[in-house]
Image (cartoon, rainbow, N blue to C red):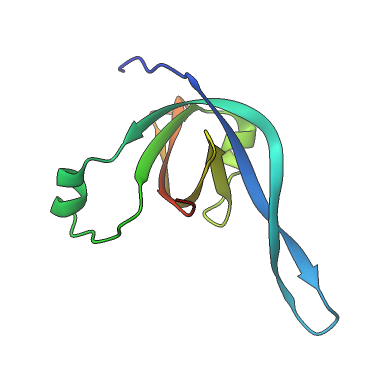
Length: 109
């Protein structure tokens, strides 16, 4: 397995659930859990084009060492890194509990 430099500090964000008595909906995103170290790689324009993506936002992959906390992150959560917030669009396990890879798309400019 290739070595990755876990040199980026990331914070996961989870939306609070707001219940007004009639319905439950997602509220504001707040920090969830501790800050984690991750390896970040940008998704190239050629890779986006090859996949048929026409999304104009920044897309990146973050790889984190496997942990119970990281394994509990859902697609509905978000991730903040270096002043940018990313929506999680894909999660996959690398190896047998070796790492988790999060494919993301930025939601902030």
